[in-house]
Image (cartoon, rainbow, N blue to C red; front, side, top):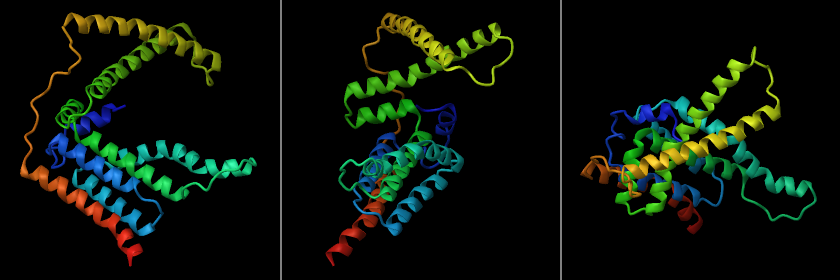
Amino acid sequence: MIGLRVEKLAEGHGWLHRRAPEAKIAAFALITLIILSEMSFSVGRMAAYAAITLLLILSARLPLSLFARRALLTAPILLLAAALPWISRKLGESAAAGPDPRLLLAKGLLAVCLLTLLAASTRFPDLIGGLEKLRAPAVLRLLAGLMYRYVPLLRDEWDRMEVARRSRTPGEPRRRPLALIARQLANLFLRAWQRADRVQAAMEARAFTGRWPRAAGRAFTGGDVLFLWSSVTLVLLVRASEVLRHGV
């Protein structure tokens, strides 16, 4: 979910922050789909995609450390997914030739960076409003809003349990036993369930109808059209270079 650091960055006033949320959602979704449509690995095209993404990050005045950290967090999962066909062959199972591991890793990292760029340049209520303007399903918007508001409650409950455990434990153990972590997670689940009931009762008392209140959104201007058109066109030109090369 969106962290506190990302939320603070989303309050910025850069040129990308000033773009309409629906323009950014549409642009980054189209760019991601174009990149994911790549079927073969090319150092030149992947470098071009990375350069476009880096240009957007730097022009929006966002810290590169944020994107490096997100990339490092997702890299093990992408590496494992890329290595699954090789692991299957080593285990003696018949597996069809999978995609190039370099292609899978590059596309995954670029998608993570683009998603982080969207979250770090757009406040979450604006994202919900942009999805509504783009006619996204109401259930999707409702679930996203509930998760965004409920994850901090889980974190708050975990912090309370940590304070209670430390007050009853003399000293901090170097290694927590697995049983202790399991009991703490089970207790967190029960306490979160009870707190969720209280949150639901509070929302019903305030006549919540399943639709989040919309903040005053930004008007869709010519700058938004230019951003949407130029960014998608630039990525399409990179993608078309492969089609033109094979066509020739």
